[in-house]
Image (cartoon, rainbow, N blue to C red):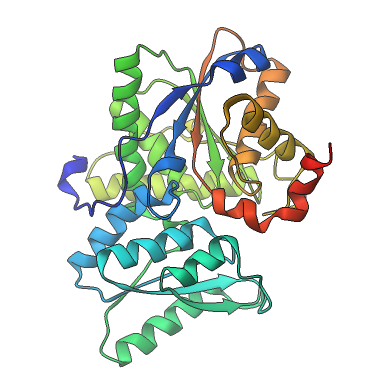
Length: 330
């Protein structure tokens, strides 16, 4: 089924599945494994690389000359799209939501270094409209743009995480790991859609919880559910997902997207000190804070085995010095 869809190889796969022994002891609850999708290898890696393997293949199938996408100035997806474009011999046009005086650091620095043409817009401008404007200009010049939504989150992009569940299930079977839960950061919905659809199709048997990094759980559930349906349609199969299978926890959002919370800062310090693994304050630290909160509340117990999907985001650490500074005060 998944092999019927073209894929352009960008990622270093399979990514490791690591038992976090010292973290497990520190938490005193479930056994915790970390699926290291921060190590997919494309320009510091991350989960978007899996999506881009299918999106770039689709772009090349359509004989595209340019990739166009959007995200925040420190978007991990935009950085990986710029890298994917370079690897595939395509140009990239990047619509970044932020301010014109954005510091040239972190993901934004890498966007430029990777050859992306950046267009910074304010929050009053609709990014989708701006992408369509750029696409129209390129078509007028005789170019062939391929527009990728924020996060690579559509049916084609979700194929990356349908395939990832085959990979993960093989690792769990090979290592004899009886996973009961999987946690991941929930943003634009495509990763969760691929995970829950892949789990249903390939029999993972574990509960999937997306921890929201912005917005509300109802919005995230609606978006992920819509992408699940679109991806099932792409497969030409009945949607096997019941509505209650799409679970989103919005307790870790805090003041909003990209704003560090005390819980996410604690999560960064905890994983760095116990396992030498880095989280970012925008996505993975909030997701990991949700996992930790569920251990402390008793929702996750010593009877559980939990997979934490590390979706990357390391470059954002360098653009969040002020937020992270309190961790270094001691």
